[in-house]
Length: 207
Image 1 (cartoon, helix red, strand yellow):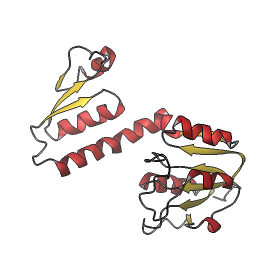
Image 2 (image 1 turned 30 degrees about the vertical axis):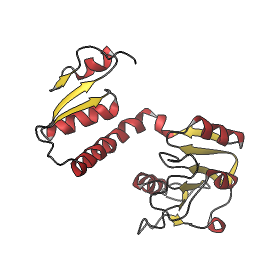
Image 3 (image 1 turned 180 degrees about the vertical axis):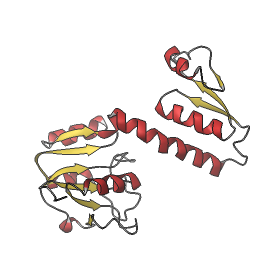
Image 4 (image 1 turned 120 degrees about the horizontal axis):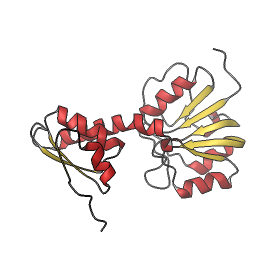
């Protein structure tokens, strides 16, 4: 498919960003930065690790999820160089779009003050549902690495009954764990009532 005039810049992030960038290569010209330690990138992506190599006047800047872990620098687990949002905003076209996962009020204000549209893709239900699976599997991976015992027969308490909780419940039970779900709302508990395992009979009281 022939590229459109759309220019996208992906700055930082993990494997999810690379996957999304590769998918968009079919319809846009995509540049990535903050991935010099990633290894071999898909052929359709253009890597630019220095400011003078970054494209000018991009239609959209795509930030990682989370955008930042320290409130200052972008989340770049595969990058050697520190990236900051203020240095990247001038690369976006007037009235362009800046997308990020879990945008804080401060970040949103910063983006909008620069004259751009701010979009939190993590707030989209389709993204949240799909992202719950790798989040749940990541939690299990950490548990298996850190615990001195196996998950088989292990009592596990999950606080909350949202998307990640539901993905985690089935996976823990499949591994033989004894799962208990605690939540504040009766409606949340009702969703787990038909699932195998224990759960709180009453919603938890607010502290």
